[in-house]
Length: 116
Image (cartoon, rainbow, N blue to C red; front, side, top):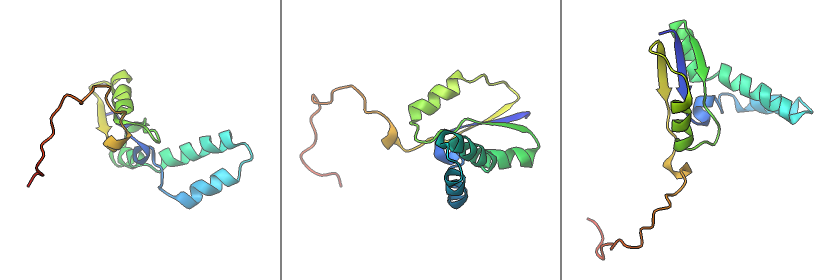
């Protein structure tokens, strides 16, 4: 294993590792775009992907993204160049973030008695 590549939502990205420090980073910069870059760097450097890479003494690529859906995660997985030397972590998010299907379910007949 030469590299750990992680895909997922905000937990993968490292959001919440130290909320107070993240807020300080945000508050200490007048340029909010610049502060978000510093926050992202802090989160990635404190993510579980980084800690695993340190443990196994290898490189890492954290592709976690705040607020993404499972479709977003899968799209990233299939668009990334992954080699046989990579160890891939995929952390799915809540299905509530997925866009509802455009398929109509009005033709289905639902049972009138509750399931037991």
